[in-house]
Image 1 (cartoon, rainbow, N blue to C red):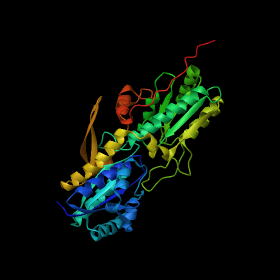
Image 2 (tube, rainbow, N blue to C red):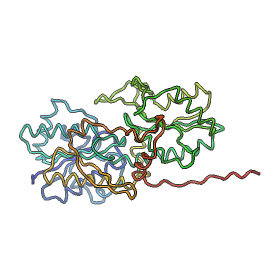
Image 3 (spheres, rainbow, N blue to C red):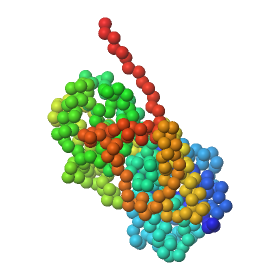
Length: 399
């Protein structure tokens, strides 16, 4: 077993349960004989290269316990893509603080960072164990059944669409349509989660648009018109990254981050929801509204999924166990054993594979017309989101 210090960082967008994973790592490190101190990177790998570290072992017990239910990224985050000139400064910081255990919580780009740092250290003869801990609300991380953070974000979406759908249904003589946009650059898992809001045929959502299927303006407008004829209103849920067949974003955004990922909510572009709103208004002349909540679905602790918290914390602890056993270059993964009752276990996936892969929604989860989801998708989503509240409707007995 290596003897030395451990460091942990958080990268990319936050989630409601990313700090639960952080708590899991800290708790397990403080119990481990091989770990002398556990440090936290302030603002990810960028902060680490500046020497911006804090001693997490000195935090009060109540603070560490409270991390499990605190949203956002307690350590701060970054979206820095490592350059060749960064590796030597990283190695120098590792040596300076005798860091032998290196943990990062994040998505694909974060796993790429760990993989490259761990590989560089191996080439230079510096003993370092690097373990990735999965995180993303998009649920598009390769090598795991689902990601910590997704269940709570999916719960946020389902509850929002359910409640906003009730409002839209009851206000249909004023506003004839409502559009709810989720985050998700290239995967439709979050818009798909809105299906859990639906109990009756006329409940929201009526149309779900996912990045896995090309957007067709005419077919979309025909579906909207059909819903309006049946129900008197229409509920649309879309992922922010939906594109036309030629890959042009419906949002018309041209702004990209450091990893060349289009930033659909950034200045320089508009939103997919707003563009859909304009299409419907210009075509039919109806009043309607669009809802773009951006990062709220990443940090709504009041809508957390309890299974999400449990799994996030377990992933953090498991990362330390793997490191102490000498495993390196892997990400903790969640394995689903059954849906009902919901059972899961933890495994591993190679960082090299996770860093390069993505996990879009499978074809069997998307309806034939590409504008809704299948029962198989519902069964996948239900245990991650948990039960939603049941609301009543007036029977409407005529006088």
